[in-house]
Length: 241
Image 1 (cartoon, rainbow, N blue to C red):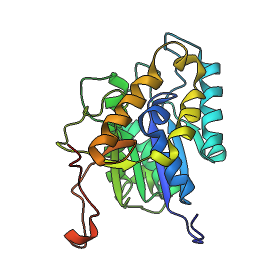
Image 2: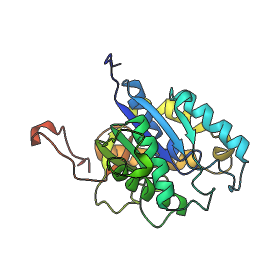
Image 3: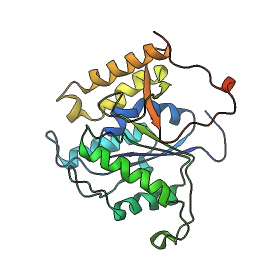
């Protein structure tokens, strides 16, 4: 656990309850355990889902946020409603305002791939735009807050390890967090009892872990090229098979 007076700050954004927990929950657990301060934003309350209702889905999300030490840093944002979230300047400004308020170093958003739930792609694009808007000092609707430039924007996949335009992901070892990740995903009881979501995420994580030479891994994709001090600072690449 880090003892830094100024912890690393991460803003994780999902379109629906459970997106973050299923898509990158093991990574979020690992970051929190390392001392990062996590803020969570969810773009709907799952009101259009086939299972559960908005009140139940919100309660499940709050239970998961508690596991991530983020109960007081969880926000539900109105981006147009579950299934009808809208890519608009107004919605991008809502997220940009949060970025200026929270001042995260890293931001996590859903994959921008088109072949998925349309809300995921919308929130991905909104977040990408918001990261740019947050750094524009002359933007009138945000002038009451100091500008902020995030260090990096990352995308996670909810339903497939390759649902992104990026060619290759960055693999994060979550072997030590695997059991806690099961508990985190299981906070969304209405969803894990209706479909084999745990099996889907676990099989993905195992396959990616085999590629990485570890037990379990989660894939994320950088929005921009990674910057290294030198090649020797990179521990390894995935060449398990």
